[in-house]
Every structure is written in C-alpha cells, then in structure tokens.
Length: 173
Image (tube, rainbow, N blue to C red):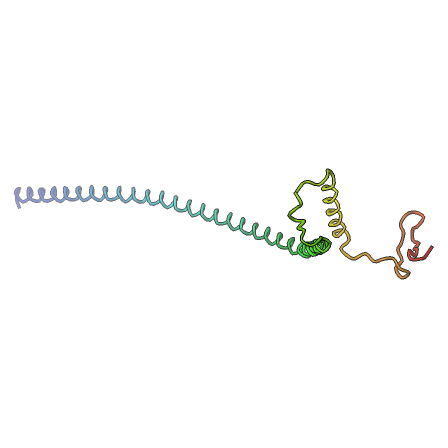
C-alpha cells in the first residue's frame, strides 16, 4: 500500500466528511424549521386555549343571566297569579257598574261618545281616583269578608277601659 492508496483513502474520507457536513447542515436547518413550527404551534395553542376560556366564561355568564331571568319570570308569574283573581274581581265589579249605568241611560243616547276626557271639574277626577284606590286598598287590607255585628258576633273593643271586655253591638238601644 503505498502513498497513492493513502491519498485515495484521504480523498474518500474528505468526501465522506463533506457529505456528513452537508447532511448536518440539512439536519440543523430542519431542526430550526421544526423548532420555529413548534413555537408557532405553541402560540396558536395558547390563543385557542384563551378563546376557549373566553367562550366558557361567556357561556357561564349567559347561563347565569338565563337563570336569573327565568327566576325573575317565575317571580313575576307568581305575582300575576296572586293578582289575577283581584283583577278579575275588579273587572267584574267595574263591568257590573258599567252595565248598571247603561241601564239608567235613556234610549238612543250614547254617553260614552259624548264624554270628553279630562273635562271633569277640578278636583273631581282626583277624588274619584282616590275612592278607587281606597276601595282597592280595603280589598288588600281585608281579604276576608267583614261580618255584620249580630247577637252571635261579639266584638272585643280595644283601649284601656275596654281591655278584655266584650260588647254586643247588635243590642237595640
């Protein structure tokens, strides 16, 4: 083996070394690309997680708002259910009053078309409204019917002198 063989061997080793350097450069370039892609995907993943959390928060807020509104609706429905009998009682009594007024009208006269709104004498309109309010307040204060005083219904009178005593209100004087 001579010098010539050694030179060939050195040349082959140098070529292999050059190939290895080229391959290492390609690997390094691929590594940099993959590392950049990894960073980009991490940033995108963080954005998606943030969007997901925001969507979950928004959904939770919507559920809370929906629950609150449904509770408000239930509450208002129960108030409506409580007020409905009183309202229908008031409407029935108003319609009875209106029908009795129509009976008293002379034939051929339509008073509903002859009345001009807000032409009541001053103070009369407010006193009518006050009477309506008072009658509604009495219905809420006294939901049970008030019994007339009879010899069987004794009423206890309050006050210092009447404490504990009962008086028959139905006795003739």
